[in-house]
Image (tube, rainbow, N blue to C red):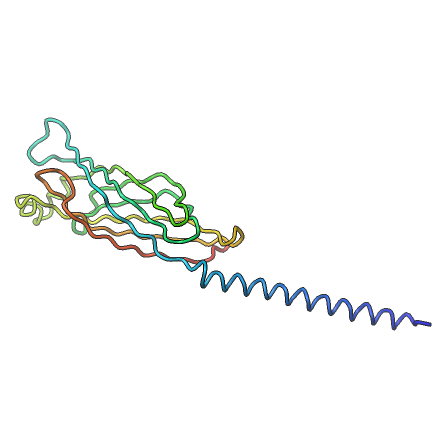
Length: 199
């Protein structure tokens, strides 16, 4: 004949074993996610290439216009096997240390291991550029250097479960040919910050 205390002890022992098994399974799943995140799903910096820059000046403007409209055709390559969901890129242009233009590009998705094209248009304040003593000499030589930064906030999902926040910084130095109002050359670099978003 089984006594109640014996049955209770058996049930308690079974529950303890079940709890240990569940905990072990959870730890294994977490370890798998961490391993995947550090190896297969390791995030690499996207790259940006500026394909062209076209500049329009207002009709009947002076030799040096007060404003110019610049349209940049750029490509952003996502080398990762995770799609990047990004908010509106915040784009700012500087001449020296002075901000001379600002715009935003549409939000969207950069698919895994794919390249997207962005064509933002920005109004450049030439009057501010002329306040810099270097501008007259550069304009006379037919080339002006602009520094443009694009800040992008977005997220990626690992296996559709773990959501991680991503901050991207693109920085490009573009030399504009004044005689043709087009890009002469450029250099770009990218940096990315990647962490799990806290809810």
